[in-house]
Length: 100
Image (tube, rainbow, N blue to C red; front, side):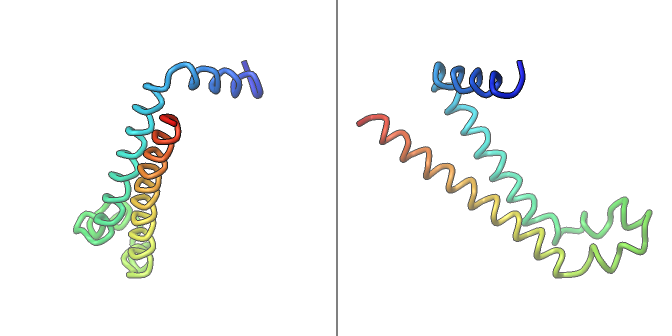
């Protein structure tokens, strides 16, 4: 199975089992939320300042410890949390639409 056949199989499989789709969507929302929380917290923790790459490659210290890079990584975390919230909102709208 390749290409178009795989897409058709997954579409048919998803249509046959809506409970599994909701479980997978809930797991994906949790994953994005956790990833976002980690990306917000990690750049400002001591773990970020004391890691393998900084001890192995001292030339990376000015780059990895720069506040702009830390802010960019935290910004990705915020985007992940917004993505999770959007998926929750979209899931609620899809559930209401299917009840009509």
